Image (cartoon, rainbow, N blue to C red):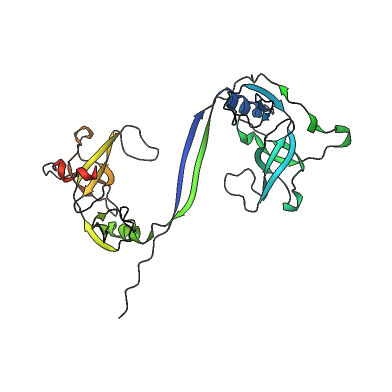
Length: 325
């Protein structure tokens, strides 16, 4: 007797990306605006240390910091790591070193890239200087990278340079930034969720029953979240279910072709002991309610329900779903 081969576990590339917008206080505003003007600013602490990049509060004493000073654009590498394969969005598109650089006049290190021909050309203690970007907008990328720097004897050495007081005032200061956060990875849903996703493509919803507490979990995770034991018994649930709770969405999401307002709800499918979330349509948003009985609506060729709509049945009694709210 031979067992049937297990279905192939699904894998797919996944990108999580969003713009992160934040305002800047006076210290960060001065720092980034200064970079635009090829000026590197730090902040002096109560005990005389100079921190670069500057922070608004002393990390040791929590004292508010506002005493800005200008430091040199040259410095010393304190530690480093070689990056053999630069990734999208990194400072350089050729192999480079990540370095911590203590700028002359500073007491803390700044993390950035060092343009060097190879790891043999990098060492702790080497002298470097800022390579400014040709187009500067008031961002950390205004420092294109660091580059090795060996001053000629007549130039002298900047290591003894004292930080110069700076008022932090510039024309057209930078007051906010937008940082694009992005994570690229390959997602594998595992055995249990692969079976769940494959069943959805056949317009079925399949969960798994815990052999200990006998609860049916949808979507399945391969183990009972309560008992911690593996789940293997598959159980088809639904297709109808009950709205346990919901929210009204009033902000339109980028690249989502759904007019606001609309409703997302937790739905306890018949036979399931865990509510899943889905969009409710086919009813005015202000008529959606707890206990509403709903059923899935599939689009042509869809691998999962597009939304859920009212079935027309009487509302479920609260006692039948209160444990799933």
